[in-house]
Image: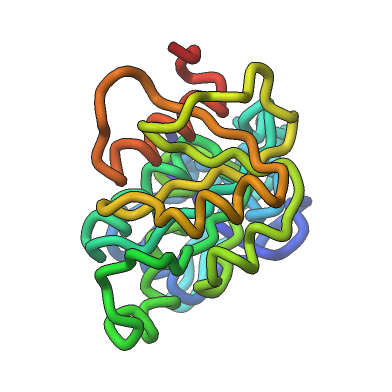
Length: 230
């Protein structure tokens, strides 16, 4: 795949690239004049382009033909329990690659990570999502929400909660879904009851019990159409 460059500017005519994207393209990747690249705006638009000129502080890319956004056919959001931070960041990366529309860091009853450990991680998490978007070829940068309580997110529509021990009651998922993945200790009885009160669908991910990060990746892959339900 050609080197991809993000810009919030319109993808037409001569596009000026400066700042971090310029530094990475010119100083790290060492693009040359005449080299083909891709431009994307993070909102679903992408075009081919050719590096027209390189200056000391910016480069100019001549925008060309539109490119497919490579987005998933169905829209889905991931409400992911905040787990071990290294594993949580893996989920951010892989969910982005699989086409998630937004990610909600979910505060749960059995959360083992103290709030002060992740209270300053928002910018880092956004950067992980951004880099994964560039790498995988998407034209949409998923939205990262602020950490939110289970009860608040349960107010949303089209919810699917994954649990290894509850009988599934979901056959066909809505076109737009919020996928709930719990912590390593599982959902509390209170959370299960709240999910039932709020008309939440239940699904499993096969006969084996998966780690939280594995469950998140499999659930996203299923709802992106990458793999079929078991």
